[in-house]
Image (cartoon, rainbow, N blue to C red; front, side, top):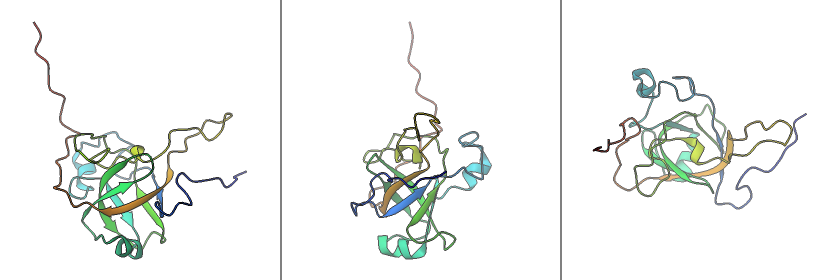
Length: 160
């Protein structure tokens, strides 16, 4: 039986949209995110965020732009795809974009929704994931666009 419960950030007006973090179509979760097929689905190198046209107009953002998606927990950059396939008030950002902490001012420069969602179990019995839903806001990203560095290997350290 499903029982309705609170959604993180609900009711304060600062987080007007519900984020759905579904499984991606271009890879298996994060596997092969660096692959050509997965990368061909990105928008300006970022994970695509789908948003209803009415919500995009209200937020002052347009198709193909990089936007900042924020929740009470963090923020990420995503490439906007405006689509009437979603109902108003809902945005969709697939899971699995490799985490990229390289940019100042956002938690992830690449579009990983894990920085937006809570990491708690649904109950003490099932401990199922609650990380697919949260409340967010979407706004224009007006700073210079940082490069995505998620696929760059770490720098080596010289050893003696």
